[in-house]
Amino acid sequence: MILLVFMAILEMKKLSTNKAIIINMSVMLIPFIFLCTCAFFYIKYEKESDFRDTMRRFTDNSAKSCVERPVDEMKLLLLSLSDNMKGDAIEKYLSSEYIDLNMVIPSIVDSTMFFSSALVSDVFENYKIYPEIKISPFAPSARPWYPHAGIKDEIIFSDPYETLKLDRSKEQSKLSVTVSMNIFDAHSQQVGNVAFDLDMKNMSRMLQEVSIPYDGRFEIASRSGVVVMYSNTDDVFKRTIPKSWLVKTTERYGSFVDEETGKIVYYRAYNNPGWIAYTSVNIATYTNTFESEYKLLALVILISSVFYFVVIALFRIYFKRLISLLYMSSNGLEVNSQVENFESLYEGMVQKHKHLKEVETLSVTDTLTQAGTRRKFEHDASDLHNKNISFHLAIIDLDNFKQINDTFGHPVGDTVLKNVCRIGTRIMGDDYSIYRFGGEELVVIFPGITFKQSYELMDEWRNEVAERIWREESLKVTFSCGMVEADSEHGLDKMLEQADKLLYQAKKNGKNCIVAAL
Image 1: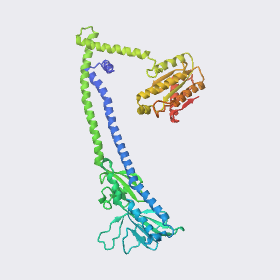
Image 2 (image 1 turned 60 degrees about the vertical axis):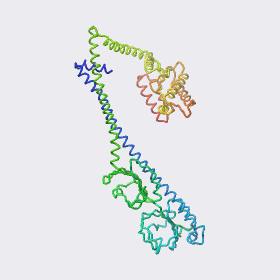
Image 3 (image 1 turned 90 degrees about the horizontal axis):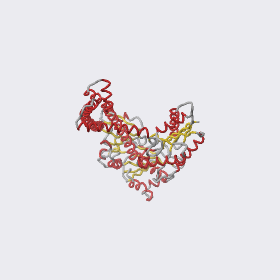
């Protein structure tokens, strides 16, 4: 092929050998440049897409694991506890006489990782704290976490707030988060409240085992910007989220680039609790990820370019010797033994090319399936047309054939194709021929019968293939088909085009079916 292009250039332009070689190789360089350009944009698109998908999945999964699941468990505990506190039960919880009831809430605090302490109070400001401590003066309803809206079964998570100092304690006030719920009696009258302080440091320990992609950072903050969960538990309630992040957090989930902090940020926001899960990656890390891929591409291009120019030099030598040989041979000049061997190689290639042309002309049978080739189909269809014999036409395509090859291997795919053709040949008999157009696409022509009869034959073939049990477990083979009726007004190409559209419609209809045009 290269030789033919080269000779054509040399003949049309009347160029020197060197110029013809340069033009020929320049033309060959165009696909290389095109492939390099495509590779660059493909890497860019794939890397960006992979980064987005990875960060989005990580943020969603981590938020569900660290926020949604613990919150759901807390709500179940509080609802269950609320059911047990109806009537005068809350008075029993506040009384020290009922030892069994007084053990319920401490056991909840001790058995879960979420809670550090609990408080039960009634509407008269009587209260009990687990573990028991004394704070004075203290009114539960005056605390920031206390839900004043009298809504039954409503569980409220507070924003971070400053805790009260214990009696005689010299420690400074600390931030805390509390989940609470009002308790109602059978008449929907509020009788009290139950509240649990969340152990955010203990809850943050689950983040220490999380591997964050792209050397990023995952943290959960309140709507006010205070970090409530972080892998470094010492920073809980001490770190704050940049205000620019809070301003850009406008949806339930999303992402943004913060130039001030040099971060790419993905987030997922919640209303109750009012927390936001942030995953951030340095822009520099993101850029370096791309640079490594581009450096690898540049190295491949460099090596390929060196190889390309070496090939150019070799082709230049080859073409010059070949042209010299052809010139000498055409003029009847004697050549030495080395050139004669070169000529023998060339003559052998010419003879082989002729032989391949003859084989191509005579070839009418597909070696794999023993079905007719496309050349045979065109010959047979043209022969029927010349004899004024109308025929119906069907095109089939094996469903999910690529998946069969990928799952079971190409040998199994070849076996499937052969067996499908064998079943079809048996059903069609000697009157109706099957042709393979390439890949998994087969064509059948039906001369001399009605369209209904041809449809029934195709449907029998389809059913038998679909019901066949294969040696490979879980292997299921079906095909889709498009059929057109004989049309004397339009040519073969029009019939093929229409049948192909119907085949596409069969694929859209769910596959394993025949779509026919009457």
